[in-house]
Length: 632
Image (cartoon, one colour):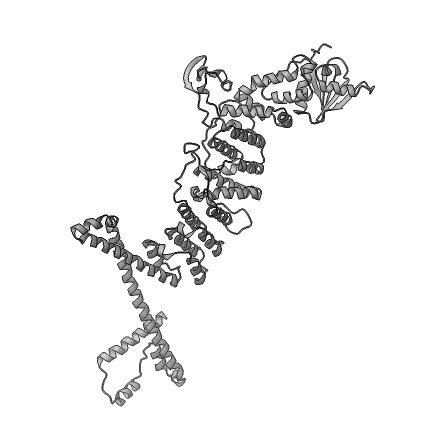
């Protein structure tokens, strides 16, 4: 039967018809869409339709109806195959090549049922054109979602992924043959052509990130398959990490709201329009966590902290969250303060998620890193010297404690736990801990002295600097016992400073021979001599102030004891309480005597007149009593 050459297919409602002037004798249903066709054009090209018709020959109905379950590509793919069977001109594109290939395989459109059949034609176009062209390969992969199982079975998906991986890791300037991914704009020598003229410009190396944007349009499952394929081919983990980070920032807006993205320009070689994939953010984050390489770097650690923040919002599974916390803990020395300030999205009263940070610190303490650094030139993943990681984490945690200390809902036990998670050797100075406690006491004025003293026990006063000791000795928010301990250790600092200065002076005043011998040993102290002298002067002033304060406290205690003794004498005689003169004398007041009383006192006086010095002593004592009472 010659193929029909009339107007072709048209759709009416949910049904497709072919306008051939003959009634339809075959109805095929694909995903609820009815195709009213003719059996001879389809049987001559499709082995699947021919076998179905042989099974239905016993039925004498003039119209045969069959349903094709799980047809790859759906109604669009079947319509393409039907047009090919009727001899209508069809157009093969990168967007439909995989779908058509799978549909032709399902319908068994092999050369056995016609020369140059659809299966062979689509296979040739796939291998000769699509797999050699970057743009077509990307488009083909993006459009294969509807026929993924069949494409996986036919190994088409694997071929496309391998082709993309090969083009990513290949530097086109190293070969004499043109890569079709750049179309006709590349000369055999690797230079870019414009209207056939060699411009001399070279195509960028495959080490760059030009391909990040193009593969970011894939679905999560396809992107995961591509990254694993690239990893198997040995592509550097720096490039894979960059592609994963770019993909995550595109579909997780929470990452971009608190950290800058890696560059603002679109990174694409092929100028073609792609439709962004529709992704489930929770599934995306859980998949990305498994794809990330086990490396460490400054930018990479900041990215992990961003993922952890978004994970707490999306509510990912506990396994994913634990893995992120463990990854961050193994490179905590590269973290930043703003990254650790993760808001609390749960029912907790605290402003920040301190429980999460506590787990991260414990991972840092308990786990050995074992992670290697990214190469410094890649992705701005800055490296950091491996020496003193615990001290860096201690400084980071001191800054973190100072930030969260102002939260009024933060419990003292949580603050103490966060401060004590790190080993004692990680903090050569405790000034950061003192600063955090001072902020905490200021934000929590209702704490008792006992609670304050319990928190202050985390500070080693021997590790406080001179400035911190000077501040603490005058800090009214600290308990008195803590201040006395600070003053004690400040005196120790003073003695050590004096000893250092004396050693320097002795070294300078020693004979020439001895001075040469001791010169090398005390060279560093001589350099710091002026600084020590300044410290000694400051501590002398502090010591004088301490002596004045001690003498004043002694005077006040003495006056207070005298007042207590006099009150005891007053309480022993109840009758004397009615005497206003005695009560007035007790409180340091002076009553004006009446004229008669004054005369009687003078006349009745037989003893010698008191000396002026005695009167002055009495008056000074009374005035001192009055001053003590006002203070009391």
